[in-house]
Image (cartoon, rainbow, N blue to C red; front, side, top):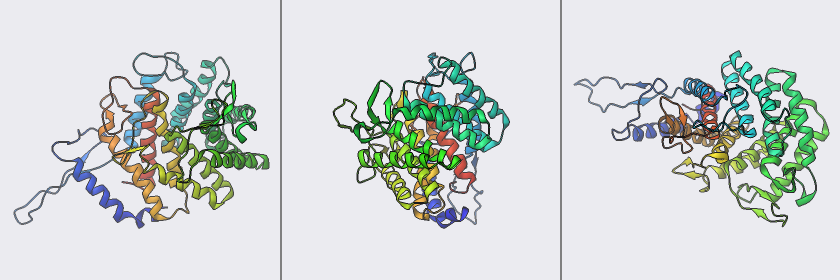
Length: 401
């Protein structure tokens, strides 16, 4: 895969060089930490007049290790079963961020092959059930969708049947949210079966496509395709922008709420369907939505992803990062398109590296261009950790510097 990066290497280096020059002025000089070493310029001699240039070396894997450790120790509950709401005393158990914590621990295991992460993953899988009334069942179909996808991913990686059992149980339950109201899709919650949205439908589309890849049952593929078609017809505009949901007030109206995680889920659903069908229509849909997300003022400020606050919004960017990274890895994407995606990811990772992380606490800001405040939510921390784990993978694959 390295050849794709080499074909755009000159373009990438130019952007990196210009970024380094602007970020290393005396006014905004970054603090050097163990994760951000600096290589000094060659010494100036009388016969070779030159201007010293400081080159920043981004050690994403080392930073990811540090962030994983800080996140684990800071947010782990006293009973060791789940991760708490924030680092400021709120010990609430929230289902869906803990599902994403399982995904983030998995990112670290895949990157390091360190068996210690397997222990943490299994403890969390069991702890979510214990903390949720001794059941994986939940009122919200999207909550179950996040955990089902994280669990199925773990089964595909480590072949532990406990994860498959959880994924299948949730897959079966989420299907009960399917009905013909608003033309299809999956309901957001059990008490509001008429309200359909991307968080539930996108998650289920990804899950169905992955189950099809696992067990080759035609009904899984049919479900994934029908859910994707429903999203595309009802909640995606001509530019590829994805809106949140429809029929919330049982009036047939679309909620014009524009969030990064909706874009991410739609991209992820399209990528998974492309992976199992090789039908180009799905890949082009993913590229269109990703291309829009990189320039849409709803998401972008100063060429970086905007803050979406803390609380639930703190986790939204991480979902987009996860699935945009998967899209950038699709082998058949042309070099220019791939470079556009990877350089966008690189730009966000580099900004956070120097500006969006508080040291020595290693807490992460919801705005990746400024330091965090006094309190950090688990959701916010997870989005930033997803970004650095993605950057570590992209660098290991030769996609970014």
